[in-house]
Image 1 (cartoon, one colour):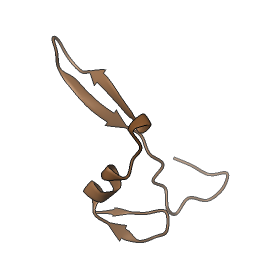
Image 2 (cartoon, helix red, strand yellow):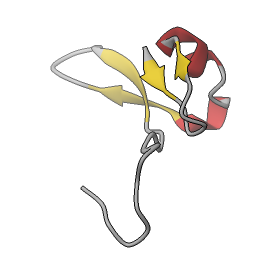
Image 3 (cartoon, one colour):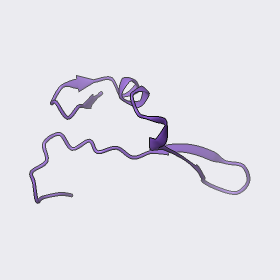
Image 4 (cartoon, helix red, strand yellow):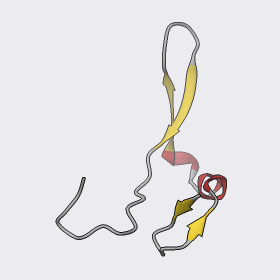
Amino acid sequence: MMISMKLRQRRTHAGIADLPETAWKRINCGDGPTLYDWAVVDNRALRELGRGH
């Protein structure tokens, strides 16, 4: 489960399915043809302006 920006619980696979194709990058992670697809999303539902991790 994940918490959405609207402070609602949501299944992670549903959030992944909503990502645009442009959010994904294919990265080689090792020797040989070891490819993984990665996406970075802002998922800080309780953030305060001017503060971060």
